[in-house]
Length: 271
Image (cartoon, rainbow, N blue to C red; front, top):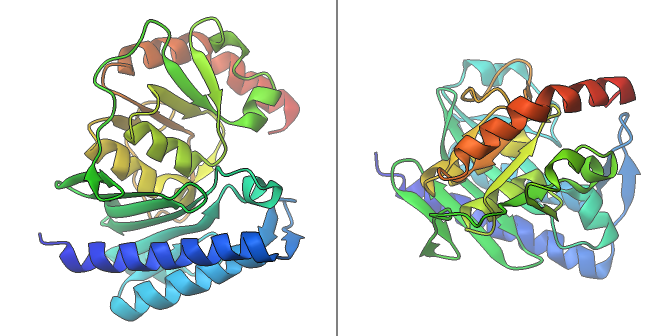
């Protein structure tokens, strides 16, 4: 299928949202907290408005799932659904750390067919179209073809702080990074060998990144190495694993050795 229109609309909308977010980072924004104490800013809400208006104006029969829009079950009856995180990494955005991203995915029959991740703070725009490849700032991008003796492992700062990556420190170069969407994109950009998060994620955190990694030649699944099926009634997914093909075997080995231990530690801490 020719996805030219979708790709064009996605790029324009995602860039517009990212530029608005970056402008508010410079001019100032307001921050509130949700019931789960996660932050939400006026930048999140503005980006959500920009994306929803642009994408649903262009494709009015598509469904909608966004972190910053009240969910509606009608999306479950749509074959095509936009899955959006207006700012993935709001904590980083609030503190001025340039490790956040706008994440936009188009899912068809539960599988991502187009996606974009834009980090405006460092001007990195990733785009992928199913079956056609992945691009970084308009140039084809691929996951690393080979790894060093000590693979680079992108890890959440909060998970590092809780000690979840201690077992991997002798085995890998553990690199702290914010937004999970940005971590997945960075891996597709050849910046690391593997990344994983063993806690629940939402569909909007990862849908675009899954496709971008796959189209860049890498592997992406849940923490049990099972494929994702998106646009589910329950938007939580069973963690996420992204890696190069070369790092797949070692990533499986690491999680087989330490995954259960980390899961039990998370359970005890209530995270």
